[in-house]
Image (cartoon, rainbow, N blue to C red):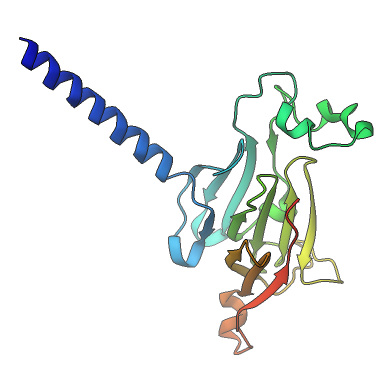
Length: 204
């Protein structure tokens, strides 16, 4: 009986460890690139923070995204995020993230997503969109303040009704603080230069 009990214990432990490993490996990729990884509908957790991105795979009409504060808040507003703010911002922070307000989606950055990369600081998400059903640019999302800005291309602002050329994030170099990208397949088919480019980014 003791031997059976011991074997049963180790079998259960191994099963639990395998299950936890599978759970942690699948949803925590630092990057996702549609043309390489394919679209995997569902929740994909942030590797170094409380956020998660939800991918909605709509096949011929593009792939869409949403963000959710997935971690345990432990308070009406997330303590870790509040610490990053100035004193003047803290007073209104409950309007940004709270127990009953933890989901974020904006058509400008959420439509026809081609790729994304989580910033190593845990407070940033870089997301690229196609110029077919999306806005055709790359955005930097400030996860703490729930705000975003267009970083590629610079200058003229684009929207889903007036899209840019479309881009794909190819890699993120954390040591050199550079985000690498290229034009999407749409531009590639038109015969334009699709060499990899980069933009300097700053970790917060």
